[in-house]
Length: 144
Image 1: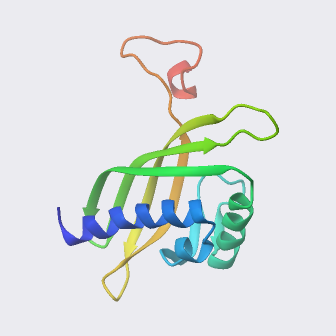
Image 2: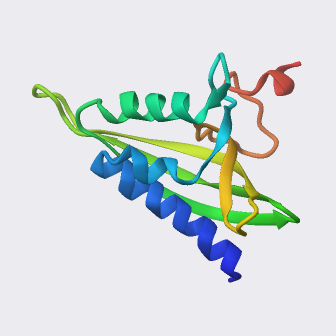
Image 3: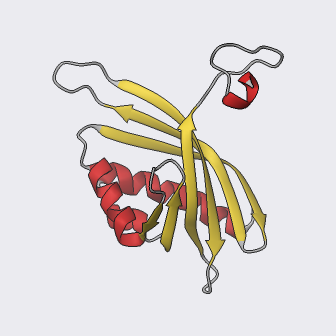
């Protein structure tokens, strides 16, 4: 494993630790001045807007994450990090603890000091797929 891969895996670890402890500053030190969150209706965010976004998400009671980077591909000054985010929502008011699983892809850029900053990201629910089958839950491209 290269030093760059170690750094990028550590970004995921720091995100998890920062999120779960409510330390938004711990998370934000790995973001560039502009971040594009493909999942949002207005995807382009300044660092301040991204910080506010995470502060609101992290303020929800009982939510925890586990981040597991699985593949890292580095091409020049860009890195593509794919992995899984496990969401755990603790039971509130007598409800049940729920768990979710998302796949994520982040694009990072090497900055002048040689470290990496996250600049683009997207995530979504894991979908079951069996080769050769086409159920009603297929993507729009599969259904076309």
